[in-house]
Length: 220
Image 1 (cartoon, rainbow, N blue to C red):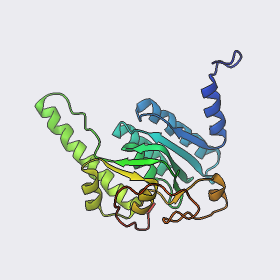
Image 2 (image 1 turned 30 degrees about the vertical axis):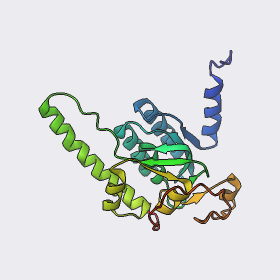
Image 3 (image 1 turned 45 degrees about the vertical axis):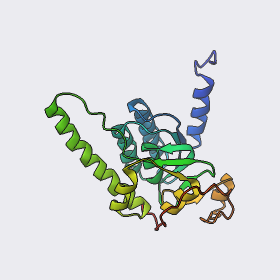
């Protein structure tokens, strides 16, 4: 549905309204187009007011590593904090961006799910080209493992081990692992600075369907 005067769809107008509230939304696979849009929005909001937080809501199956790293670098570049929110699914690059949010401002809704894994290299071309691409992919994997370790408090070795195969986390497990800082059921809990602890106080109790490593103080 498009407005006759503006030519904007209803979806466009909703996202424009959210942007005015300093909310950006990653609700699809991460590709170059989505990355460029999010980076532009982050830069715009930082230029408008570098002292106010930006809230990045994530419901994404992941996607391009290079596109995702562009978003991450922009999050690090701007002066304002980027608070991250997991809703629905934060998988692969979605998980990486979630854990890269500002320290103390990484949130998960109670029934969100987080997936960490290696991701796909997507190598192609001649044997020589594939070898070069594989070397670059290994460097990128190492960079991502180091960054994730810094933000979660886990060791690089633990991150590499856990990311070797698909590893799923409930919201509670993601909190314990260090991907997020709080589980939130109401926005007012954040506005009032009400802590949500790993024992579920003040939050819905997600199903704990597997053991999880103990968490350390996340780092930003």
